[in-house]
Length: 368
Image (cartoon, rainbow, N blue to C red; front, side, top):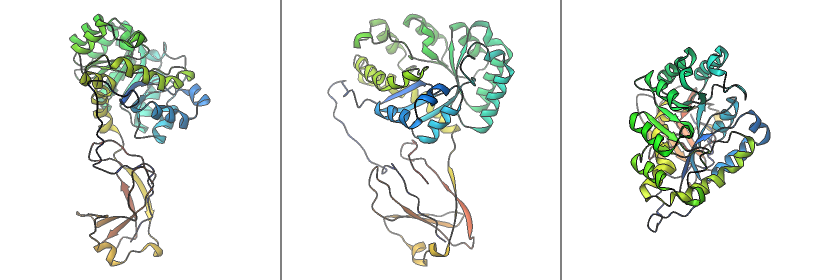
């Protein structure tokens, strides 16, 4: 029994290594990958900027991935469906704008979060706004419990007091401190030194790298905590979405002030190492594709017996599955495969197509 062809849109070949020559610690500005850990695509942005354009802007900025949370969650889901290789979803507790100062006493906001956690997949809860002793109210406490239950990072737009209260509520929860609390490098360093489950983003911190150069206090912070700081843009208004490429380019300029390894850490590795283990554990591990055989698709016995270079046999307790490329696979070019299920009398079944690339664990673009 054979299955229909599955075209792919941008499926790269495995084991391709791109080697670039660098001079000292200087990257070409357009090539240093950036992970943006602070993007919103809220309801007003959805109205003004199509999701396809947002993805175009992100790819134009050479983003490795983007942590996206939105008010409401629809914008995040639109982007995630369009570019699952690029978007890491976060869950804001806001249904509309204007809930930043009320959500933590609003039972409806909590119910909204709980419902979406049941229906969707996320890496973080937040970005949310929370200050001081409000972090100890029942709803924020429940948010911490949900973070533990669903393996989520808290993305908190908070003062240091609230951050410490959140961390004290669980021995395991991690906090990504939005905007680094708008604190000074010295105060950020003090918080990071006290809490090993705290990371900080640099969203909307225009003073970092002002004029293309880092001041000594920021260099000292990055050097003292090479694994804890990361980039972010904060597209809190629709027009700021168009700032993504400019922000990434500007960051690449001041990142050249740092040693190569440290520049890579701040640019994308710190965000990747914090967020991706959670997302890899939480995201859907496979896409289910329901397909049925037809008489025209029946393979010959020869198909099930093929053992050529363009054919993969998957053998286990289940029937043997043969995956055969129907033409030479070119990077970023569509191609088709013929999937056959052999040694079985089943005439109708579901096939799971796993969209994980084993070589490095990233998702790949495909359209089953």
